[in-house]
Length: 369
Ligand code: UD1
Ligand code: UDP
Picture 1 (cartoon, helix red, strand yellow):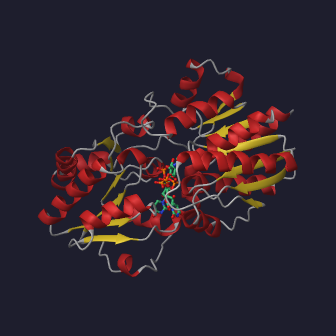
Picture 2 (picture 1 turned 45 degrees about the horizontal axis):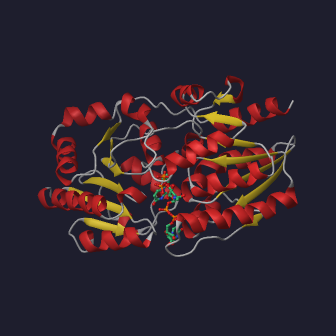
């Protein structure tokens, strides 16, 4: 059976790496790996870490690319690859434009698609944007669904996806996390080496979502600035996403602020160890909500809603919204109220046991029989 895997951004690469590696070692499969390179440097960091060597690299990324540009370049580029390789199955991941457009290119050729991390929903088509619609459209064109949780499966059942096409596998992010989070780690980055995690409280910040660009991001950064000005023992580390619009805002509000470190995007391994050592995480990222839940690390999500309510139910994640005062108050509570802080750190991990890739491979074999 010939299986073609495709991804293009940092989070897809992290979450597909364990699966792609396992697939390539399995003699039942002939495998092809395509990267669209919707991200360039942030994708290459992951390819290097996991020693992944793509068979095709569409190299689509351009400075300030639009969703339309990504969609059309991937549709065309993937079309050519699919016509040449004629795989039996295409594996896509998650909710990016690479995901949707690769799925569409496969659909046009009647090649079945398996969607890894299927069934997540906010039911608000503009939030996250365009990810919610990318998920809905990808799920409507897929033939096989790998759901991280029971809730994700139930969402698909409500949309009349036949039960026999759905497999609850856990999230492959936990497979990746377990591969890099074990054991002691020494940071090579000077800023991180200089942090004293015992005496200082480190808040790890990440922020990049399209719907937060502009006003919301300003609110988030101003809340952070207020916090560091009031707490001497708090340091903020922000590996700034390479999107120029994010960098501009971060520079405008946070550059040069005492106890705020704006650094380059970290490779996955140091990032995970930074997360483990931080006091709390402030983020609008999808994947980090899952990882932090697994590490039992309190997370405040700077968004209005999330397609990952499991971690909220489990207690590790709270929605902090996108208003300066609200975010400021919630961070302050976790800094001042030890009980509340410890309660959030007790939670259990709802996203799996690190064996999602194994389950996905078994399900693909079953489907192929
Ligand atoms: C993309 C995905 C989003 C995902 C996020 C993960 C879409 C529409 N967006 O958003 O779902 O959550 O990735 O991070 O699919 N850039 C670089 N180098 C890089 C990466 C990005 O320079 O390695 C810059 C480029 O100028 C690029 C811009 O960032 O044009 C935006 O990248 P893009 O992939 O369009 O959007 P993201 O916000 O990264
Ligand atoms: N991450 C990383 N380095 C960083 C920031 C994040 O390796 O500097 C990892 C993080 O652990 C998670 C993923 O990148 O696995 C999340 O990516 P991002 O927030 O860009 O995308 P999202 O998950 O929101 O789609």
